[in-house]
Image 1 (tube, rainbow, N blue to C red):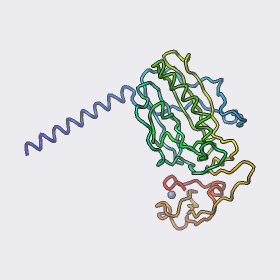
Image 2 (image 1 turned 60 degrees about the horizontal axis):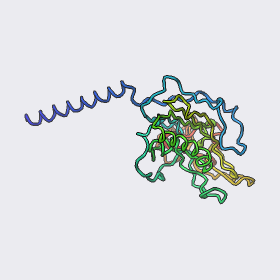
Image 3 (image 1 turned 180 degrees about the vertical axis):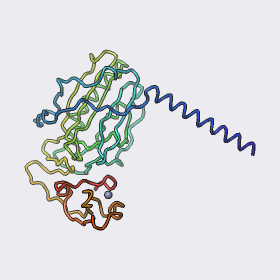
Image 4 (image 1 turned 90 degrees about the vertical axis):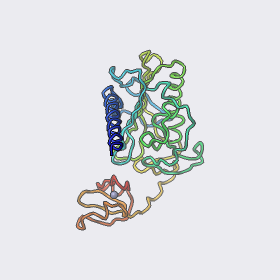
Length: 294
Ligand SMILES: [Zn+2]
């Protein structure tokens, strides 16, 4: 009995110690939620015209003076009700950079994900699981808060040159770079129309690295429906949307897959079976259920 009491006491002490450490870490400003960038006026972004990116706000990133820090960190936004990534930010330093090889990320299905191939796309696959904060910067790999559905073109021609620039600078100088990538969606679209990338080198106050750009999530030669991720070859007509069975809640204006628990627990008078396309429901003012993500 005495032995057990002693074991219990050490367990309590251990837990108290852990709680104390956790408190100290948060009091020192441990992981903070991501502060979104200054609002971007989507209307002001010109349509894609052959260049993978355009500068925003005269290419000046929207970090605040109080955010300048030389301690490395990385923070990600929780997925929203539609399963979409939000802004991800980091203070990139050599200590965050990966020392291990990348492992498979094929198990992550970002919002709007589709596996489709076109001959006109380098590597054939239209979509990549695109890291918001590149793997080479923080070693963050199969993190679903850091992976979006992005075209091959955005990934390789749009984002990679900026990631390489930051990675090279950090490796060469040992300095830190504030870095934030924000996917920008049109309304409830599951696929981002583009990403905003901002970076600012800390120790030299932006002399080495400073940019604020919008990178288009497009693929030359391919048309994309950003609401769903569906795609088709430019110049060809859009394929017919497949008919899918859904269950509607006419009171909450949510729609579900038939197997969702929300569909079976629904009041009879609000329940309606529906067969058709996802878009037609969204056009009628219905919103996809956050549990079954129809
Ligand atoms: Zn549901």
